[in-house]
Image (cartoon, rainbow, N blue to C red):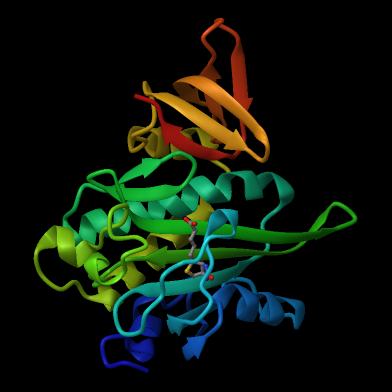
Length: 259
Ligand code: BTN
């Protein structure tokens, strides 16, 4: 394990916590999502974190590649077993935990682009990918994948250079992966326990959304909706007002800003 990611120290910080107390570290994996899924199928306890220094086939939403070089960033997948109802709120809890961790460790004013891109100066710094498996209406497992660009130099990766940034680039100095990871897991532990107080969760999450009030286009599979992002409800759904005044309530989608 690279010196800056000290698992023993992490365990010390997370004593008594559900999420992250058991963390499995890998120097290089294709994707932490696949390792976590396998562990979940084998019955790994809820809260187990799969952490990797490098991913050779890291993936993002919409089957995009997630740039995952070694020694720079955070790539982790968390095994959880929320109820089906709680699953809807997990996206909010996770992006909020990332924002809180970035603000407290790097002092940077991160925001959220709906539904769950974490951004700095409107450039992507973190992403969340959630996979889950149900059987007979019961949750078998949920994997929450989180990638945070900590010390990445986006200029070295032309495919994301114009749309992404990192904590180090924005702060102007290297940032400790360990501090960001520990702070994120601490925040997520708190938020996961309080998932049921959805009103407070939605209120804080909404305060960091940089999408509201903007004219946007949302792609939901093959369907495209256009309008003004007016609000989000307590479940994190986006309330979009179309040009004819009608309302679309959207649970997920890919947002692009319209000029
Ligand atoms: C997004 O497209 O915004 C989501 C990106 C999620 C990336 C993380 S990195 C750790 C985990 N393993 C993956 O392959 N993807 C997620």
